[in-house]
Length: 308
Ligand code: ATP
Image 1 (cartoon, protein in one colour):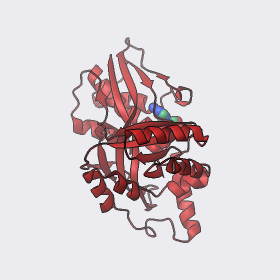
Image 2 (cartoon, protein in one colour):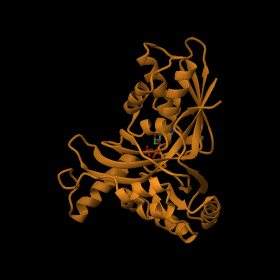
Image 3 (cartoon, helix red, strand yellow):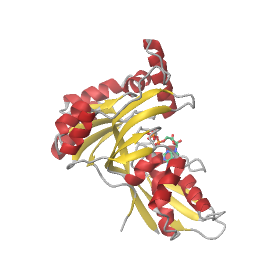
Image 4 (tube, helix red, strand yellow):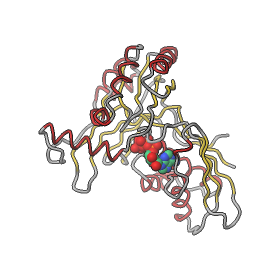
């Protein structure tokens, strides 16, 4: 039995370019891995049992347990790469990452399942091959393998690790219900059309990483990082879920250094001065009635790793 722990991500910068002819957007995406994470356990199954999936945790009821689950898809993809036609494995996801929350929870489970099955089946897949399989599963999966802080370009799948000093303290406010990532990108395009700037890649400049934000990470400067937090999807997430404005305000009023919607939302992320301040912001958010719950956590942390 192999258990893999895998982090959720927050995008400290999410620059969104115009809509490309292939339907994707070019991104300048600074991923940051936080200790709030899932655990995926792979255990041996009898011949012919196939890939089976169970899930526990507060959001377990809304996690799909069929072949669309990224953990199951990852197990099959890894098996296929090694010529195993009908893999047998029992996968269990202990889920702490909010579902459809903009924290790449499904992608995290896909990355964790790759690592767990690789260890269980003793395949010794090279890291570069695992990254390749991860990119095939989805744009956010390679980062969940890597962890730390990284700059994602293209659709997010071209990854460069970034230097970072020390630990940053975060709070995540979990909303009731999720937001569909494609719907948020469509709303972003619609708002750009409405504003008259245009939404195609010929209208919007290709986004780039903000040098000030990269310096704040490298210097371990939480105040500077808070000032540089940026998410081009935030106005689209707020347009689809106007109540998030009250969540962002509640965390800021409780003393957060900075706040933003995490990825495509609806989870909101708050940067705090230290662990004590983060605990106070989480407590205030829980009491505010503007979110379902709030978690204080920290990062960066490593990517998907087998637990001893
Ligand atoms: P991202 O930020 O990468 O867009 P997200 O955090 O907003 O993702 P996920 O939690 O990954 O959203 O879930 C998005 C959808 O993916 C869910 O509604 C669900 O149908 C599907 N899904 C597939 N596998 C999983 C999984 N292991 N855990 C949760 N959702 C999954």
